[in-house]
Amino acid sequence: MTDNHPEEQEAGRFRAVLHPHRSLSPTGFLVLMVCLGTVSFVTGMAFLLMGAWPVFGFFGLDVLLVYIAFRLNYRSGRAYELIELSPELLSLTQVDPKGRSKRFEFNPFWVRVRCSEEADGRARLRLASHGRELEFGHVLSHDERRAFAVALEGALAAARSGARFRM
Image (tube, rainbow, N blue to C red; front, side, top):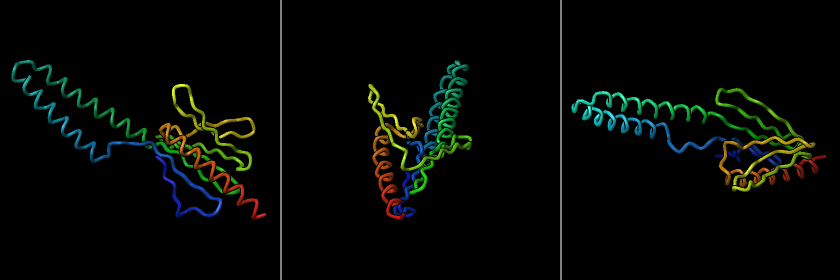
């Protein structure tokens, strides 16, 4: 998912924050867990009353594992990438789920956006400059990568032309 903030943009400037998509909101997660817990408890009680008491524990274990899986998924959703472009600099900041960040800087006149298609339809998004490439956009879907490549190429063209006219 891309958050592009047009209110912050001036001529030749571009800013986008790339977030991973999460289809289930925190409220939806709570509803899901309550429903799953209720169904598991009621079904587990039926097995307990029939004398199959170990099954009750397995139903509780299932709910716990689903909860842990969703919590890990939400934690990985804290990762994001920040792309900022001005006529003088293109910067890419990658932040992992633990909050550690890496920052990469490029000259807008030399950097190129490359979006390549793999044989299976996947798209790879890279910034290339001086014979080196940096892959980014991991948090985006393949269609979003293609669309973002077009948007960033347009922003780079605008930044390059804006810088030429300022000299």
